[in-house]
Length: 241
Image 1 (spheres, helix red, strand yellow):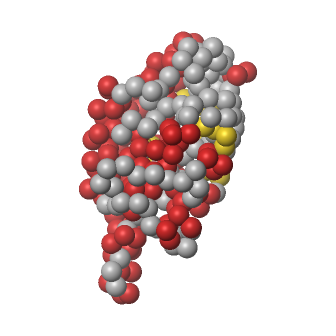
Image 2 (image 1 turned 90 degrees about the vertical axis):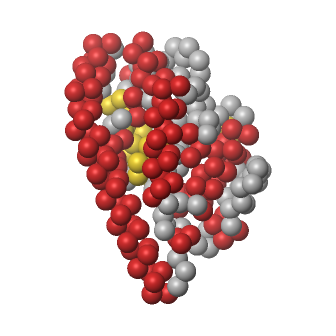
C-alpha cells in the first residue's frame, strides 16, 4: 500500500521514498554547494545542541519524579525498573530504546510483536497510569543524550511491530524512508493523533505519511511547535494504554 496524503500537504518526494537521497534535518533548505554545506553544518550543530540541552535539563528537573516512578515500579511488581527493546533507529540501525517497565516481567514483549490492548492483562496496575500519561517514555531522554534519538522525530518502532497482523514494512511501501532521521521522543504523527496501537493498515499508513511530511518540512521552529503540542497531547490525548 502506498503513502496517501490529505489536505494541502505535499506528497513526499520520490527521491525520499526510493532512498536516493538521505535527508538530514537541514536537507530541505540546502540551496547551493558551499552555502548549502554551511547551512547543513550549522543546522545539525544547532539541532544536536538543542537536543542535548533539552534532554539534560529535562532529566535534571524530572529527577525526583524519575526516582519516585522507579521506586513505585519496584513496589508494584517484581522485576527490573527499565524495559529495553530493540527498535529501528537512524538508517535502519537497531538501537536499544529504554522505557519504564509497564508489564509483568514474564509478559514483556521484547520484539513488539503483540499489540497492547485496552485492559491488557500483561500491563501492571502502575503500568496503565504510566502508559496513559506517556511517563513510561521518560527514560528515552537517556537515548537522546547518547545520540541515538532526538527529542522530536519519527517514533522508533519495534522490529516486529504490526498493523492488521502484517509487519509495517509489508504494509507501507517506502516505509524505511522514515529512518533517514533519528527517531524521536515525540513526533508530528503523535501530536496529530496517530499514536497508540495499529490495528488497521490505515493507522500505520497515516503515521508514516506524517513522518515523511515532517522529514520534508523540518526546521527547529517546527520541532519547538511539536514539543509544545506534545505537552497538550500528554494531558488530554487518547490512544495510549
